[in-house]
Length: 172
Image (tube, rainbow, N blue to C red; front, side, top):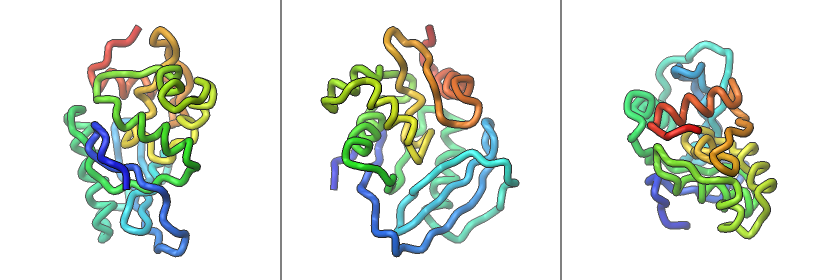
């Protein structure tokens, strides 16, 4: 199991597909979010137009909902959740690198590319496939010279900029 990165949580390889899946929908300032857990870990966060679903009995989903609420109240809140994003070894390496970017700071696709020995374009692809946005902070990855490039979450670059401003990052 990998060491905990700066963000205070682990990015683990996915568990087998036989685990039971649970989900809930929570409200956020950026729209409603569907949280999905399986095998004792959070596996996905996705924007949805569905209404919030209320309380859940799943402890991982309860913890994720509470920690997201704290994050939106105080962007310095560090997530501490078991995560199991589905992806290949390179994608997990990129997501691990994103987890090490402190709140309020950014890193470039090129810098993460150097750290993972892949081109910036490949890093951008892995960012776009991040199944647990906000918690795995793909919004903290920017283009060369701080350029705002795409964001796969609802609202695109505008949402990315909102998250970065919320965290106190200086935007160019």
